[in-house]
Length: 56
Image 1: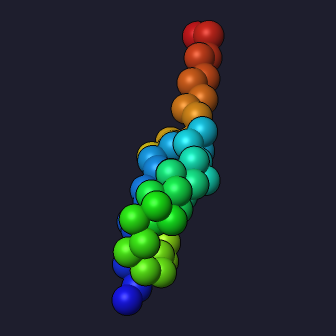
Image 2: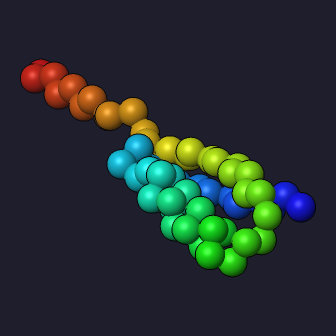
């Protein structure tokens, strides 16, 4: 039986690797079967805003 693990990070500074490791440790100890990972990397990073001030 295949089990699915959904991993989501929301910033470029976050990483799914630590989460994968913890899930695999649990899977090895409890023997639920194969684990497939579904990863989602979402960034809500907005482009920097450049403000220009013009003297009159």
